[in-house]
Image (cartoon, rainbow, N blue to C red; front, side, top):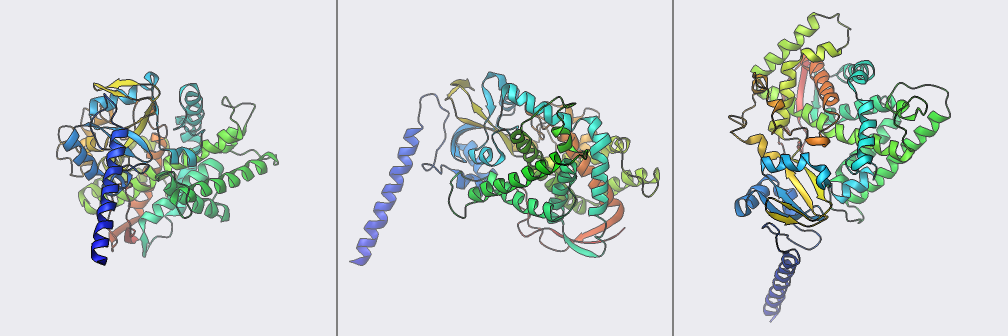
Length: 464
């Protein structure tokens, strides 16, 4: 009898789940929408998307083509995997395709962050950001700080086993903090870093405010960071000292073209740290991994950097002319970003009902411009799964091609691209000229939704 009742209960649960799935599909079956599945109410297909990642995308494309609907990260979404269409979407913000990042990211990064705003507000905030990371600022203010931090950060790795993932995360965060507010490694930076790592995890989660959820931790981390930054603003206003850093520039009301409120300054700072942190830390880690696995590439890279050191005194810092000469280093960074796919795509949102690719997309729907597969297209990158930096040095530079979307595209192309390249290049310079290394375990890598080594990536370092 008990077995019979249990069987009936299981049957009823299955029927209920099936009906729930069917109801959700019918709810989003508006005429003119592309094909696809929507999954569960509220959760949609987020779990499958985050767990399966590229496999989920490939399976959906095999079933429905390169333009299909889904429900991920809390909202109905159109996924576009068509290279030409993706370029059109990225280049036409003025036609109603504005940034459409998940609610969790908007809540945690702030309503004034550059990814959330559009129109004249975006133009103003982007202008303020570009003024902080212009070529002149990089040359005169930022690069000396980066060089000093890299020297210090890599100064005591000899004869140690280190987790290069942890070290590059710490390096990227401290580098941003030094450029923004001149903060060195201290109790403030450790407090800030602890909160920031929780904030990062919260940005890629469902916006469900439950105890113990990454979203709630991210919201709390944001509050802690705002408290730290507001205290820093108050201390600086009470001090007569002039600070030569990003925050000092933003706080000047007399000679600063872009006059921001405290809320805008805080959100801009969080955005700068957030946007640079993951790309710089992960690309640096993966470059170390690929260089270890490809000795000929490492040999060529070392040749370039030792040539720079031969022109300089032992304590001379890296300058902008040195960066310009690092052509192979730049190629290594691009190839690392392509093969590891640090950024899988970008999100847009429709501000009105609009036609795309022959389908009618409702107002308020997200469009996921999924660029990952472009990186592995054999027509664009011959032998695409091979780590080959030399491909970027060919006469017709890939960097100038229309499909080059590693750093985004259109008016939303990453404004910190050159600053990030400067940071990674300086890190690689001191790393490869000072050390040899070998992997000692923990080399398991995940490529989605973030590129990371779940158990760390440990290397044994010795002097070169």
